[in-house]
Length: 181
Image 1: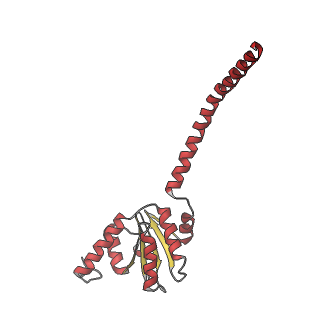
Image 2: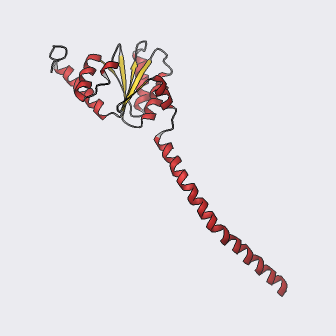
C-alpha cells in the first residue's frame, strides 16, 4: 500500500501493522501532545500507565493515519496534528481516563487533546468528568449492595416475631418458676 504516493519501507509497514493491531484491541484511546516533555518525563508517564495496563506510545501522525484508515477508524485521523502520543486502554474506560489525567497532571506542558472511546469522541471536559466516575468494580459493588439491603430487611422482618416469641416464652417460664417457688 502506498502512503502519500510512496511505498512504505518494511520497517514502516511493521509499525503500521502494530498500530492497527493496537487500535483494534484497545477499548479506548486518549490523544495527547508530548511537547515540552523530556525523555525521562515520558518514561515516568509510561511507567505509571503501564501499571494499569495502558500503553503510551509516541506515534508518527502519517503512519497512524494509515493504520486508522486500514482499521476502519474514520474519526481518529482528523485529530492527529502536531507531536502526538496516544494512550491505548484495554480495560475500564474510567480507569483509562483517571490514570492518564493523573499521570499527566505533574507535567503541565503535556496537553490532552481528547479521547476516542468506542465510536464516541470526548473533549477534555468530558474526559475529566469520566475520570471522576467510580470504576466498574465500585459500581458493581454498589448495585450488589442495593440488592442485598432489601433481602436483609426481609430476613429481619421474619426474624423479629420469632425473637419476640422467644422473649415471651422466656418471660412466661420465669414467671412460672417464680410462682412455683
